[in-house]
Image (cartoon, rainbow, N blue to C red; front, top):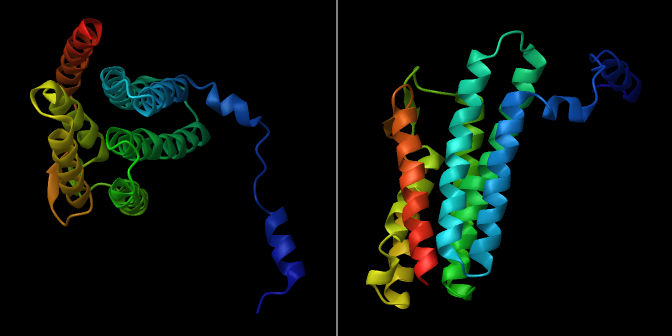
Length: 223
């Protein structure tokens, strides 16, 4: 059994960073990640007050910035290993908010915060946490393959489905998104291999983000 003194000695041997905490947040890719977090916080706010068109706009832009931070990081020169490690942790924690908590709030709010929606909200957040924990330990299956469905796909699919919100009654559509999110949550932790969208798919995402923003903005304006 390790004595308290030996534990203290071990702690003193850890390298101490000379930079402040906020200096890492000022790294350009990390700024991009934080902008994505801001979009997610806006989405949570708009979902909570029932403005779902605005919430979907915030969500798709959160995905856009989530993709963009990695591209910026790979193209930056002179970025230190510490900045990269900090950015990886920051990105993962932001993903919990953007692609776990935010869709859960959308489900709860659309269901008028009925207790029947609490289990679904828990499953969304729990599977998100489990998936990201697994990814942080094991990473990709290979350079272009995930194990399970990536969490950002949940948001992209949810936003697309919300375009048809007006075609159904509120009750029926709440059931539709409940079932949809449960299926996506199962796919997030399923033992299936899914492709990692990169390269030219980024330009597809740009078009998708702008298009959905215009469509939701138009629907929002018509309300």
